[in-house]
Length: 221
Image (cartoon, rainbow, N blue to C red; front, side):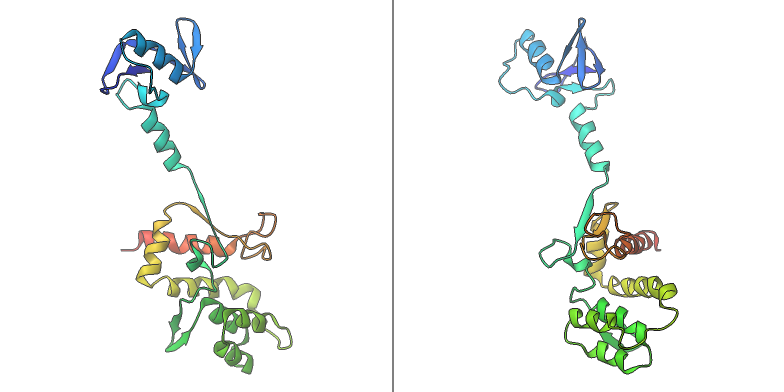
């Protein structure tokens, strides 16, 4: 590591080695800020505004500050969504972003998803016409009417199809792509399958499928 002055000039006479989070200089360990302050004072500079990482660089001239920022940028971040107050509420199946499937309009993904449990029944029509995604969910989770026998094997395919349709909307697609490589998590304390559950250890299948759609968009021609 080399010391850098206030004009961003590398000072090759002050070369040191990094040891964990410290710098070694003449047999002693220093923090980046303390050693920079001492050596810059030696060069006649004031010590009033020394910012450690900004005053050290690699042999190639890359500042430690920039290396650290690159590291932070590369780290996976988690984006949580669930309630209307969340910044990415648009990712919720309750968000008021409809989809059209075979000339039929569905007000939300929740309406579409729940109705697919009851194809060719009155319950299907009730869910389709329900006034809110909450009511659609309640009707879909009712067992007064039997759901289709293959539901467990097809439900993820149904959800994936609905998400692809929803996020074909250019604004929603742009919002999804804006999340980059960050992990998407449905932060529902009540749902351990589609969400992360109260303990954060749920399957988060909705978040996983959203990331799958994001990857599909990323590599589409």
